[in-house]
Every structure is written in structure tokens, then in C-alpha cells.
Length: 133
Image (cartoon, rainbow, N blue to C red; front, side, top):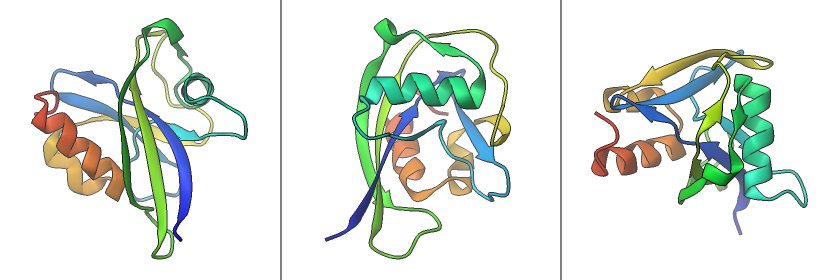
């Protein structure tokens, strides 16, 4: 049985690009979010992680489930899978990389190769839906 890393991500698109982040010391971009803590709901994880990473407040009442995606976990041994539960949501504040995040960037579909395997699936989904150019 595969080991599953349970993560939540925020999907925020503007002008055909999606907001993405790169953690200090990492070579790939990841959609903002993080691991769910025991007993934490997906929405609670989303609000906490985005506040920590990007210094903005997610508006919980605006959150909508975009989908759940699974793929081999980037940088982990074969058989370790990441399950990414993705939400869209409005926010308040100014987007700014903080804590472990080195940079926040806007990526287009052509940047797909710069992301983790699960993010590539999400990029495909966003592109097919006309949200990513």
C-alpha cells in the first residue's frame, strides 16, 4: 500500500496564470498550501497555510472545492503519493512570500515542467478548463 501525503492547495488564477511558490532550497514550484494536521479540515488547513506562506487571509465562505489530484510525491521514494485537495477562494491582504517561501510567482501552462508531478496534473486540469494559458 502506498504512503499518502495529505495536502491542501489554493488555486488562485489571474489572467491565464496561476499563483505558485518556491520554498527555500527547492528546485520546483508548488501551488501554495501544505500538509493537513491531524483533525484539521481541508478549509482550516487552507486558511492556516496560506496565512503562513503568503500573509493573506482566505475568506472561508468563498472557498470552493476544485478537485482532488494524486501523483508520485516530488523528491520522495517511489510509492509515496501526494493527495492534493484543491480549493479556490477569495482573499484579503497583500500577497507576499513569507516564512519558508523564497518566492511567489505567476506561472502559465508553458511553465508546467517547472512544477511537481501533482501540480502538473492540476495544470492540465486548469488548462483544459480554460483557466491557464
